[in-house]
Each structure stands twice: as C-alpha cells, then as structure tokens.
Length: 250
Length: 250
Image (cartoon, rainbow over all chains, first blue to last red; front, side, top):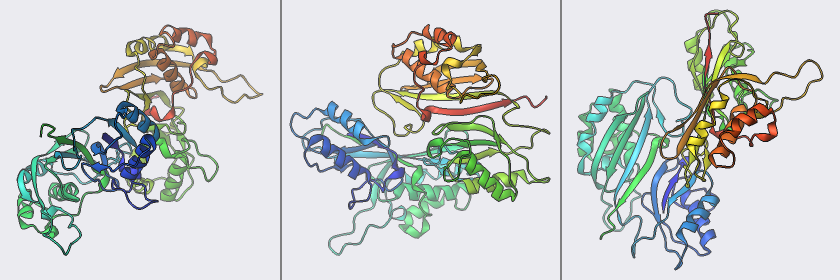
C-alpha cells in the first residue's frame, strides 16, 4: 500500500507499546479490523515523530482472494483525515516494502521570510534570517555519490555482537529549489538513509545558508566521519518521505 | 493589522465567554499583554469555527508613539503557529476595519477525487463523486451584481425593534478554477457577506456539480429568497477569508 500521512499527531511511524499513537500502530489496528486476521507490517522508511509522508510504502500478507479495492475503501473510512491509503496493489511473491526498495526520496521545506505562515507552520521550518540559497545549492554537490554518512547520522544503539552497521549510502540527487515567496524546498534521493540523515544534512546546509559555515565545509564534514562537525538536525515538521522506488523485475 | 490564521483549533473569530478559545480572544489577550492597556478590537469579517483567514483585517487604538514593528514582532512571538500578524500599519483617523471595508474576498477549496489528501484535510472539502466543473462555472454568473441573498444566508436572530437587516449584497466576481489533480477553487468577492453566505453558495454549487441541481437553478434559488431551496452549507474547513479591500482616500 502507498500511504500518505501528516505526522503531527503521531509518535513517529514505528509501532510502540500500547498507549502511544503511531502511524504503524494505527494502520495495523485498522487493517486487522478489516481483514479479521493479524498482519505483520513492513515499511519502506521509518519516519520520526512529526515527520510526514506522501509516498510511504508498506507491505503485509493478506488472505487469499482479498478484495484490495475494498480494503482501501474500508481503511480510508476507518483511518480518518491524518492517514490516507493512496493505493493498494498485489506485490510479487516475497515482496517486502523495505528490502525490495531501491531508492527513497525525501523533501524538506523551509519558509525563509521575516513573518511565518500559519498554513505552513506544521509542514515547514520557519527561518527569519535571510539564507544564501546559492551557497546551499553549492553545498549539495559533495553529497552526490557513495559516501559514509556517519557525520550526518544519529549513532545507532551499540551492540556487543557483530560489526557496527554500515553508514555507507549512495545519494543519487540532492538539490534546493526556490518555490517563491520565501519557500525553499530541499529534495534528496538515495539508495537508503540512516537515522536523522536528511534532517542533519538540512541543519548543516542552513548553517551554510546563514554564512556560519562555508559550502566547502560540507565536503570536509562528510569526509571527517565526525558527528560533532555537523549542525543540529533540522526540526521534524519540515520533512516528508516523498516516494519510494522499486525494481519489480528482479 | 493583517492577520492570517488556521481556524481549526478555534471556536470562530468572535470573542466569547471565558474558557472558549477564539481568534479574537487570543489576539486581544496577546495585544493587551504587549501594549499594557485594554483594547477594543474590530474585524473586517467574523469567520465561523473552523474557517481560516489569510488576510483578515483588525483595527484598534494604540497608545501614542506605539512601536508598530515591535508590536508585530512581540505578537508573533506570543501567538504561536496558528495565528500570524502579517503586517501592522497606522490607519487614517477614525479607521474601522469593518465599516471602512469596501470589499471582501473569500476562497473555498474542494478536493474532488476518489482518495482524500491528508495534507489538505483541514483546508478543503473532500468530495469523492466527480463534479461537473463547467456546470459549476455556469452557476456563478447569476450571482454577479446586486441581489438579495436571503436564500443563501443563515437567518439572523429576530429582533422586535426596527426593520430586519438587509440581505442585499453586491457580488463583484465569482469563479471556479481547476488547480489540477482534482483540486478546485472557488473565489468570490463582494461588498460584504451575510452569515454562511459563501458556504451556502458552495453547497448549492456542489449540488449543481453532482447533477442534482441544474446551473439554471442558481438564478431561480437566488430570486426565490427562500432559504429552503439552497443546499446545506459546505463544511467550514474549506473556507478562507482571503483579503479585504479599503478605500483609504475617503
């Protein structure tokens, strides 16, 4: 299923202990109610609290002969305005929304003008100080390609067994666009993302836009593999998981 | 002051008894806190619960020598994300946001596609059934000009003294635009509006779009001055008070 949601009222995507409202918990409860059987739900990208999605993809097994169009209609009636099932499709045998994904694209929105906009307050980061968009655009270039993104990722909990997980990711595209009236959009597509990677990159790029860092510092920060050289992550409400790509021919 | 707000969390604009959160109540409390004196606030158009504004205009007296730019900054810090003071200006002597207004413009947004959009849920009316936009566009024509809008207005509470208030209003412009991807926008500008006038007009036009009424019924409904011929008002969350015009040369 392709799912859109406004993350504002949810404690992130991943299901948690009871009493905590999450996107996955809400989706699973509704889907199990409609199907009448327990499901094991997998998602393409776990979003943090306050982060939105336009094209999150989730997968689960359904009983044979399940009416997928009917499932979509029933879910959209049950789920209410904050979560919408945009489409439901039968996947190939063994399809898994996370493991089969070949790329994820995120968008981050900044409102850069003196006065905020209440219509965008829960969807963007309001920054009063004028940003140098050209410098932020230059800061995108070093990200493209395969790199170790340790500097821009929240360290995963340490484990005593096995190697630490790799922070190497391949970024296909990263760009800032001026949408007019002070609205700036960052788009980034990569094979996959580490935890808080987009928000850490945006936080560091905004420091470049404010003139507190130079565009060239981006390459240095990346190569350093030192989390302390990156800026604080940008706030969650500006971030949207935009789309997920799959190679279904495999 | 020009004020934008998301009406979702407010019980309408007009100040009410304590304990009820309204836009005016919130604005007055913040402004009195900043100025240190009580104010008497007038607005260009009272919006109902759930209705938004981009260009609401409010007026009040301030102590002589008041720093208007400082007032705006302080208010935007106090008010939080749902209400934003877009601008503050000194008006001519005797200026009154309601009585000096020469025109108000409203926008109403409809999302017309099978699947709703969580990003627009609190800003639009989702209608699954396909609408005939051309018929709705035709239905706009009879509204233009000076008419008695009794058929499209919530009856004001009756008073035993004096004549009932006039429902005559002059509509300067009314049009539907297709913004793409099923998003339809209705824009209407008039000298002034009666209570629930835009929502009643939109409700009736959507009945035309669904084929339950004909475009020609619009003229007949208007002339009948019979509220029962109009459809139920469209829901509030699609409506935004867009702008207010003034003739400051008077």
